[in-house]
Image (cartoon, rainbow, N blue to C red; front, side, top):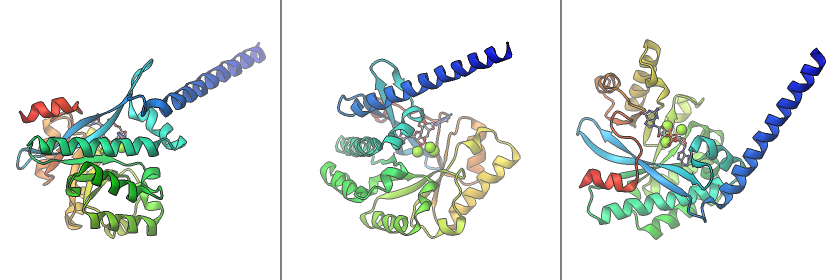
Length: 272
Ligand code: C2E
Ligand code: MG
Ligand code: MG
Ligand code: MG
C-alpha cells in the first residue's frame, strides 16, 4: 500500500512539475510578444514630500494585461523576463514610455515631477545600457534631472563597473536610488563610496512597527542623512507609520496611505 501511495505521490508531483513548467513556458512565449502586441502598460505611484505636502515624483510600475490570464503582477513575470533576457527589450520599453510620459506632463504644464524607473541588474549591467538611456533621453527630450533610476543593492557585485556607470549617470544628470534598501547585503563602507542620490527604505521595515523594525528604519534614515543622501520610505499605509517617519525626519514617502499606483489619466486628474 505504502509503495502504491508513494508512486501516486510521485506521479502527482510530476504532474505538478509539468504543469508548472508548461505554465512557465507559456508565460515565456507570451511575454516575448507582449511588447509588440501592446499588452504592457505603466502605472504611476506618487511620491510625496510630507513637509511641503506635495507630490514631488512618481514611480513607474509595469503591468501586463495578458489576453487570457488577465492582469499579471510584476512579481510573476519580471523574474521570467530576467531569466530569458526579455528584460532588455521590456526594460527599454519601460524607460522610453516613462520618459515620454513625464515629458508630456511637463508640456501640458503640470508641476515638474521626477519619474522613477525600476532597472533590473541584468539591464543595468548590459553593455549598451548607457547608450540606450542617452538615446531615449534625446528622443523624448526629457531633462535628465527629472529621471531617477531605481536599482537594488545587488548591483554591488561588480564594483569597478558599477562605480564607473554610476559616475557616468551623475555626469549626465540622471538620479539614482537604491530600492528595497536594507534587504540586500551591501556593505555600508562600499555603499558610502558610490555616487548615488537616495535610499528607499524597504516596506518590510514598516509593515509591522515593532521595536526592531523601528530601530532599523531610524538607522537607515540616520545613515542617509550622514551620507548626504535623500531617503524615502515605501509602503506607508497608516497614520502611525506616517507619524513615526515624520518624527524621524524622513521627508519623502510613498504608499497606499497616500496613493495607490494609478493610470496616467488618474495622475492627470490629481493636477487638474
Ligand atoms: P518596488 O520597486 O519596490 O515597488 C513597490 C511595490 O510596492 C509596488 O508593487 C507597489 O505597488 C507596492 N506598494 C506601494 N505602496 C504600497 C503599500 O503601501 N503597501 C503595499 N503592500 N504595497 C505597496 P508592484 O507594482 O507589484 O511591483 C513589484 C515589484 O516589481 C517592484 O517593487 C519592482 O521590484 C518590480 N517592478 C515593477 N515594475 C518594474 C519595471 O518596470 N521594471 C523592473 N525591472 N521591475 C519592476
Ligand atoms: Mg521601485
Ligand atoms: Mg521597493
Ligand atoms: Mg522591489
